Amino acid sequence: MNHFTRKRGHLCAEDVPLEELARAYGTPLYVYSSATLTRHYRVLDASLAPRRHLCCYAVKANSNLAVLSLFARLGSGFDIVSMGELYRVLKAGGHPGKVVYSGVGKRDEEIAFALKQGVKVLDVESAEELTRVSAVARRLHRRAPIALRVNPAVDPRTHPYIATGLRESKFGVAVEEALHLYSAAAQDPSLEVRGVAMHIGSQITEVGPFLDALARLLTLVATLGREGVHIEHLDLGGGLGITYGDERPPSPSAYGRAVGKALGSFPGEILIEPGRVLVGNAGVLLTRVLYRKKNGRRSFLVVDAAMTDLVRPALYGAQHFIEPVRPPSRHREVFDVVGPVCESADFLAQDRRLPEVGPGDLLCVRSAGAYGFAMASNYNSRPRAAEVLVAGTTALLARRRERLADLVRGESPRPPPRRFGQRGHLG
Image (tube, rainbow, N blue to C red):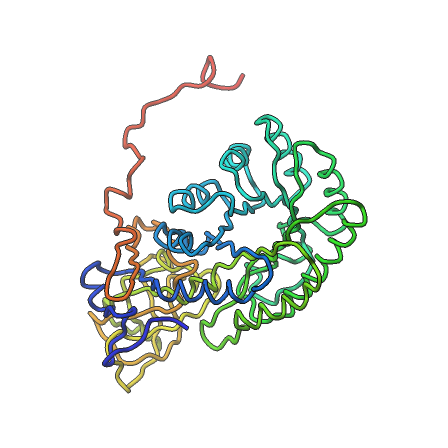
C-alpha cells in the first residue's frame, strides 16, 4: 500500500498534487510519502511480534537524512555498510547502539569509528577481517561486539547482481569456516561474540529461500551451543521484495508468521534488515517530457530524468510503472522513455505502452524510493535532483537540487603541486 493516489484524476502524494510539487521544486524530482514510510515500518515491525526483535533499516536503499530521521523516531535500528552511512545515521538522530555494521571491506578507520561510536555489532565477513577487527579493538582498549555473516549457499532466485547468498558470492563465510572462526573469536579477549548473521539477496518474492537459509543458521547455532559458544541474536538480513509490475511478494505478515514458526524455540533476539520493502513504494520520481521523436520504427519520449537519476532500468533491466500525472487519455502509444545522457543505455523504459503525452507533460515513475537517488551520479556533469518529503498537506525540501557550483566543489583548475621523494621518482 502507498499514499500516491489520484484525486479528481490528478496524481497526489498524500494530499499534495504532484504537479504543484514539480512547479515548486522543478524536475527531475524525488517525492517521498511520510505516511507510507510510517505504515510500512509499523506493519513489518508488528509482523515479528511478540518475539524480541529489532528492525534495522538498510540505509543503502535511501540515505536521505529526513528519511533516516523519520525511522529513528519510529524506533528503528539501522543496517550500514560504510563509515559515511554511520555518520548519516548519527546526524539523523539514530542510536548507535541499534546499528549493525555490515560490509566485506571495512578499513581500519571505519572499524575504529564504529567501535568508538558504540555500534550494536560488527558483522564480520572473512577470517582476515576478524583478525583486523581484533587488532583495532585491542589498540583502542575495547571489546568489539561481532557476528559472523554466514553464507548459507541458498539461491534466492532473484537478479544475479543482487543475489548475495550463493556459494560463489563475495559475501560472508561458509558454514564450515564459521565454526572455526567462532571458536577462535570466543577465545579472543578483544572480541565479544554476539550473534550469527546472513543476507541472501534482494527483491526476493517468495518465503522459501529465507526459510532454507534460516534452517542452516539454526543448525549452526545448535552446533555452536554444544561447543560452548553462546549466540545472543540471529540477524536474518533483508531482501523482502516489492511489487514493481506483476510480482507477488509475500506480505510482511506472511513473512513474519513463516519466520516465527521456523525459529521454533530460539530464545534470543531477532534482527532483520529491511530496505526496499520500507522505502521502495514510498517514493516516486517526477520527470517532464522534453520532446517526442521517431527513428525508424521506434518512438521515443525524451524526458529530463536520466540514468543518472534512476540507474536501475539500465543496470538491472528493472521495470518501473510510469504514468502521466494528469488524467490519462484513453489513446495509447508504444514508446521508449529515454533521458538526455549520451549513452544508449540511458532509458527509464523500453517498448512501454503509455497514454498519449507530449512536451511539457509530467510523468510519474513509481517505486523509485529505493536505490533511486541513492545510486544517482553526476555523469555528463548533471546536477542531482531535489528530494521532497510529504506529510499530509505539507512538503519538506529534504535535499535541494544541486547547483552548477556543486559539480566542481573540491576541484581546482590549477592544483598546487606536491613533491614526493628526494628526486620525485623511484630509484
